[in-house]
Image 1 (tube, rainbow, N blue to C red):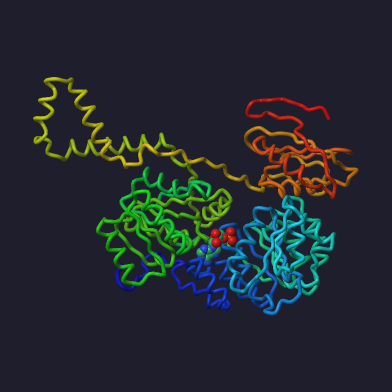
Image 2 (tube, protein in one colour):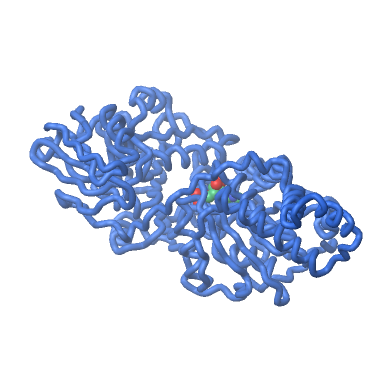
Length: 578
Ligand code: AMP
């Protein structure tokens, strides 16, 4: 790289100086936390949302997971926390649809708010209520809660909303889908009228608009899924994505690189911290990887680029900031280790390959929950990203054989083979020519294998979370149709029904609050006078049953048992007597 990087990519907004977190007016404690986390620059949603939120305005934001929306609301909220917090009641409440998200969001608050001494508490069903009571009693600044459990605490008088300055509804569409509309209304009734209200949603159906109209005042509107094409998307780039669980990403990256065998590849990460970690991991796995991020001096960066150009490194692991303006002829592959935070950033990244008529490949590793962001990128760029299965060990072996075959063909066509003719001739005195060839190919093939070839492990395939649009609307109805997709299902019997005031949303809330099951995995719900039946995927039935047994529904303990398996993997048709 030259000493001053010159932007050579398409003129997308990502090329412009996007500004820093300090430019957004964040206080030093927060800037310090962000630097420690290795965040180099704000994502588009953060750039747009942070200033109005700091100014105390209401906000309606359309943004999916992966855009950086959590920090977009968490940072201003932490900044607005009064310095002197003597009272014990929370100043901010974040409502989220699931326990998983409650934990994730409160961890984010904790990381960002460490230097400010922020006290953050996640509250959700399934966790012993005693622990939550104690923590609430000690005093908290921010509560991150699922609506059902929040309402429980409000009813007990253990969660007091009188001091709230801000309420955030995160993944609001998901909360409505899960039947939390009434709970949200009830919670907002307890919050002070003078407050800041923030609503984030991946989609903006009419119901969300209604919710916003009712509870937000003159909100600033932000849409990250802009429906306009991004100029300069490189058409020569083959684009694909693999869905993979976070824990398997390093292995998946290795597998994809082995199958693709790029001349040189750049792997984009979100933060410096991740760049360093991944570089180390990939070197440990036998790749020649170099880190490139904004924390490095120009001299260090030049050295890295020199090694890449000289071919002593073949993998560059970089942040967006460090790779801005980078032009390396050898690059054949761009890998997004995470889904980029905005379509513009995606286009900018893949613009690193496919230059000057050369062919390029762009690969994105996405967690299942980031699938929506991929769809947005497809829509905005007007280009298809094929979602492929992670290559299996068998795929890899086939591919390696293909590479050996290609190398042999090339040798047959190009090389002077005379010097080895004598070996073949002497061996054919003893062996069949075919056998000689087989042994030679085998030796050539084994020489190409990495030392770890025998230890290759299968990487678990993960399914796409189906789109919520495909789900039935059920709110307010007694019976909710639909069925979880794929695999068998199990009908779970719950010994509470209409007489106990049970509604579908209570059951969805209880299940998603107690288990890792998402609302969209839940199939039909039938509510009778004295009992209810809920259909859940066979694979998670036991977890659902255990979760429900350990909790209360409408304040009551219920008998919970497996009713029957429907069209299960092993086609068991068992029906317990009710
Ligand atoms: P979210 O869309 O809020 O779920 O965030 C997605 C991921 O991006 C999380 O792992 C965050 O830690 C990370 N992240 C958020 N903002 C930034 C940023 N400005 N720079 C780097 N990583 C970020």
